[in-house]
Length: 250
Image 1 (cartoon, rainbow, N blue to C red):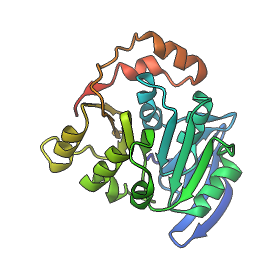
Image 2 (image 1 turned 45 degrees about the vertical axis):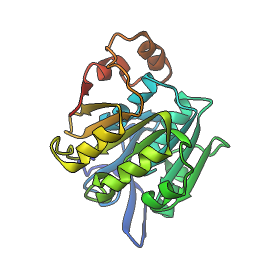
Image 3 (image 1 turned 60 degrees about the vertical axis):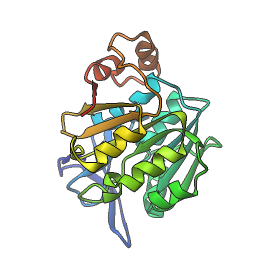
Image 4 (image 1 turned 30 degrees about the vertical axis):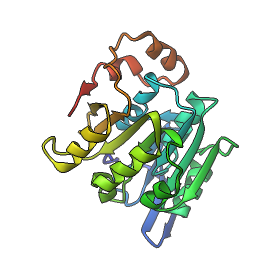
């Protein structure tokens, strides 16, 4: 989450039991915010499927190793990750999960959240949604669970990691956006090492740490990997430059 300028044009303002939901326009960008201090989602209005925040872009990096047929996005927000996957992977079926129905409606009305047969959205708490999913039922999980001013504690719990591992297919990937990285000596990171064969991390300019975890052992890809150029043509988010910043572990 980043601090936006407060000079944007207020496009929409509503609230639910958890607080305000605002849509702000800044020149060519559109922002979803819950308190006008932090940006929850940000898109380019001319290309709503293009993520603007660096950490959102980094969460898509597992696609460079394997193109998923099924993906789960925990924390739909403005629909940035759902829209990017929908645009990038024309054969991928995407399941979005969000706790707040009003947020999902705002994503549909103001952020071009795709409404096709390949996208379905469940209104639920992330843990319960994972418990309800069949074992091995998805190839990619993107977890970006944030409230108005902080990350959801769920993402830092070992049970959450266990649930994600159970739902992923044998070659599945998990990407989690952490405001602060897990302690490399802590119980959460030990849990990750036990359940995932490969762990990588990416640190954004905003100091968010994106953890990338694969159930199957895979090599660290160089920024010169040819497949990155192909991905760049469809979703121009500087794939080669980002991959060059990925490192093993934390």
